[in-house]
Image 1 (spheres, rainbow, N blue to C red):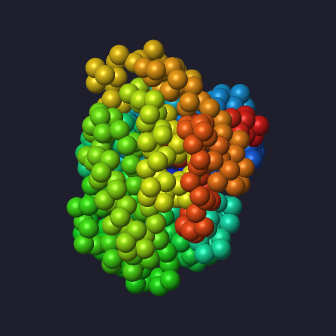
Image 2: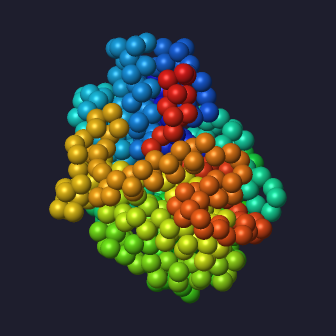
Length: 444
């Protein structure tokens, strides 16, 4: 079978969720090609070649863009079987075959014709993962790079595990995995990192939803990868509570090459943190920041500042928190604009506090629509989102403009000259796609 795997967006990374299933399909004897519409043009000949086409949709932005791409594909070829696979594959009403969770077994079965097209399948079974087929993808120099010490270094992306043992209500992962997680396996991770290093990577992002879901396994992976590839640097994603619960590991983690940690702070409003079931409060964020900074690991917090329960003062509190902890330099402006998404199946839909704010479901936006209790909060979000999208290369110019919008008349803090490692892709998995992203898919 001739199979085309398509990605629309994977946070600026070379798409692992093309390379990993491609390896499985190649091993099963299929012809496989990959197309990453985030960096490649629409290829009508490639779509004409394919007998089946599957779209990777690991996040909301990817699903929104994939729906548009599928609409265009059907104008070219109405007969070709189509599938969505990934975390967001289950949302929406498209008649394509849709595979959620650990998708590789089911995707292989669909390509082989042993399952019919149409239903939504959720698979959480354990799978043996092969070394991803990265030779089918564009080169690393077309993707996000690590900025560190005045240099831009090629960066790769791997996952040591999938799923999460936590059930944060706003996150799409627990709606699918329900507190379960699956490890990729040390050998597979090592083999994947080896080929990324061969392709020129000098930095690797571990994209696990939480790197410390299985702490002993995660540390074994980090130790072995660091030992095998000395000089390689890393970033990981870790919950606030895990930073605190495992405070004894961070000096070693820094020595192993981790240069920054992404952590979902979300908000400084403790009531909202409770509704989200985050497992931490604002004071915990301060403590976690101090632990990481004390060993030289930069903190890159992610935020969810706009929810139905956001209060007028919350954005000012968040920005003041960032200033007090010297984190403005670590914050991509888009983080201060994120608005809660409520896709089908969101655990937040079970809360009466959510129901009171809902105004219906938007099938095009793939989310339930809500309004803040105070109209000024929604107006603020729209203004900040525009500032983030139109902002230039100078991060501080955008931050200053946001500070002025949030706290007019208050002098912004002095611009930090501290150099903080960061990836050059600033967009975020739970953000709406930008108008530029949507236009690019229509144009391809």
